[in-house]
Structures are given as structure tokens and as C-alpha cells.
Length: 270
Image 1 (cartoon, rainbow, N blue to C red):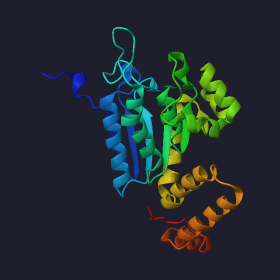
Image 2: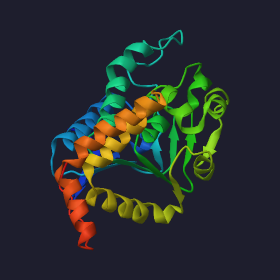
Image 3: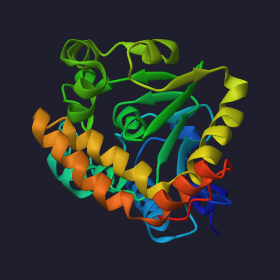
């Protein structure tokens, strides 16, 4: 007979209107990432990408943690008798690169609701979201140097762009546990709220995003990411190309009409 634990899905999927919530669901292991959780998370992201009824995605964790990073007991990486791990590069190529690519290419805005510790790949998974809101008791930890590795799951790209090279080096090399309040102060995340306010705050943010111009919000992510790798004139050219595309879409027409008619817009593009 299957155990209750075996019957528990590694990711809980819940849709409320246009908001899809994926909850990492290995609370006894602080939602650390193993093969089953990766597979379920990728399936949840695929649903968000393919379902036209989804206009915003929330990523959070069950229990007292958001995600403690890679599960070192996972057979794909578990140490041998001599302490040597499995091929970490293979693990990145097979799981973390596809996960990071899927997160950053979603056609809907994304919100991380960080309810506890976010460590290693778990921290960088949260930071891939467009908006990160953390409970005051939450913390962020680039734990990689503690086991002689480098930031992965997109961390090497994200950290210097979020907080600058000097702070990124300190976070990656010294691996301090960063409080949610300090994460806001450094510009790592958007907002820190009291623990009891996390749910209502995320609900308010996601309601606004789900009612917003989805295509324009996703293009905002794309141009901000792309402009960081461009010169000034290239960035201006990119703005012109994207604005030309968006300016002919239904949402822009609706936004202008709503403004002129002094009413709330009803956006529909995705």
C-alpha cells in the first residue's frame, strides 16, 4: 500500500481566477529540489505558459521554508562513499538550465512569495521571479561556497545585476544569511512584509498584475533584461521596436480609450 507521503504531490497547483499558484511541497525537507519536484514544477510552468486563462503566476513554499536548494540526497547528485558528488554539470544542464529558461520566458508576470528560508538554488529560483515579496522572518542565502561550488540556477547572472558586483561577490563568497529586510535594503527583492501580511500583500499584487496588460508586462521584463547587455543607442532602438509592436495591440487601444473615458481599463492581450 502506498504511503501518505508517496501520495503527496511535490508541487501543489491552485488557480484562483487568472492567478495560478505553484507551492513547492516537500516541507519536511524545506522544499529542497529533487527530481520529482523539478518535474512537477516544470509541468506547472508549462501549464501557466499554455493556459490563456492564466495571467499571473505565484511561486511559494509549503511549511516553514520557501526552498532550501538542491537536495543533496537526490540520487542524481548524492555523494558516493568517498564523498564525491554526481556530475553537477549534468544536473545543471538537465534540470536547472531548463528551469531557469522556463521561468524567464513565461508569457505572464511572476511573483515569488518567500515564506521562509530561500537558500542556494532556492534563493535564485525566487530571484528569477519578476517581483519578490518576503515575509519578515524569511532569509536568503547563497550557500554554494559552503560546499565549494558557485551560484547556479541563474545566480551568477542575477546577483550582480540586482545588487552590483561588490555586493554580489560578498553574498557569493562569504555566504551570509541575509534577512528579508536587508534583502530589500540591498535591492535584491521588492518588498518585505510582516509574516501575517504576506498572503494579503501577494494577493493584492497578483490581482493588479492579472488585471494588467499582460503582454506589455512580459515585454517589460524582456527589455529590462536585454538592455543590460546593450549600449545606449541599442537600448533606444529596442524601445522603439517593442513600443511599435505594443502600440498597435488591443491593450494599448483599450488603455488609451479608458484613459480618455476616465474608466478602468479592461486588458485582454496575453
